[in-house]
Length: 488
Ligand SMILES: [Zn+2]
Image 1 (cartoon, rainbow, N blue to C red):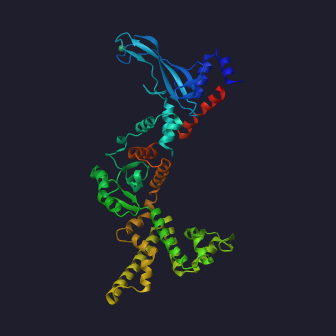
Image 2 (image 1 turned 120 degrees about the horizontal axis):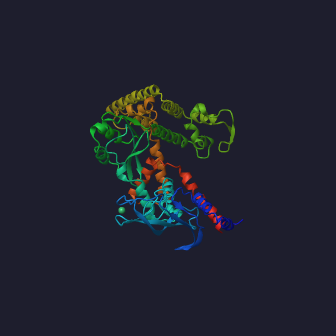
Image 3 (image 1 turned 90 degrees about the vertical axis):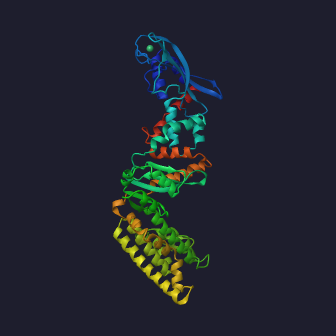
């Protein structure tokens, strides 16, 4: 049976029509009565628009909103049109709303029925439309796409964003979290901005247009010294000045170098060394391919490499297991074998929060590096500029240089904090997630010129915890599929 026929059979049962409309428009407002048949007609730029007639009545005998008097007389209805959510933007849904009016007999003011559950006063869209826009702002969708999906103007989307996020509501000048993360993100015009979040709750603390130490100190100096003294840890990457700025600003803080940054640095240095060894062999040779084609295996924990299931390797022209590839490649270079052992010892220490092993490794390295420096000084004194080959090799070794950076007097204690079990739960992971999201959004929107809107969306992503899950809000659009099927 056609839906319209079904509707006609119900026409004598206006209560049932009302219930169906409430159900399919997913409107919970009790004062709204939708007991008339919806109709489809052209409207503005659309060929087909679904209009659902509705009346908003006073819930009980109203009192005057101006003087509180109960002596009121009912007048007729004020017509208005409310946009509702639709699954198909080319077939919009409007509620033809008539609001009941009343006049106060005491003060002669007129007022009309309002329902905050349906829409705020003077609004031209229902709360569901606003919710859907917010739920789309929380995802990786460009503002332009949101306007297209919801048939609203760009300024409506910006207004919803502004209403959901007021910048003043997030500047928290009276309290600072105890654990902070520092990093930088690339926002608009390829410009780097300083970002700071709460390491526990993952809410935004600061997003500044610049990233200079002057900007950072200016922002945090807005907090009292007592507030700043509460900050216990700051997690950061190996940026040259974040640690010193944090130490100046927060007197009682421990600096933690983010463990993922340390592992990334070590891995990059090892890869550099591997490529150097690879280039010693002729290009299409098996040795060259051993180093080139299976580079990921070198970075995996050796104990976890597969040693049981040989597979045919096209580039090596024979069957080998993963463990065999690594051990054969490392046999070709003693230096790389040593580097391999070192990076995995460090990996294990950091991942297992074994701060003692990490400290022992790094201090031993520091000691031997000091000896090399002494040798260098002696050599310069005796022979002048050019160093012998063994010292040159150390100078050119990326892993040694990286470890040297990690073990400078300034960095060593901060690096050791990364493996301290006490600080195991703090990392820059959440900021890296935001970085990735911004990068994707910038690419989707072909650049994002407006820093304020970008900042508000970042706040929304980090700070906004929706009451309903986003998919539930989007799920409300299902009803218009029902309408479209039935009204064709
Ligand atoms: Zn009155």
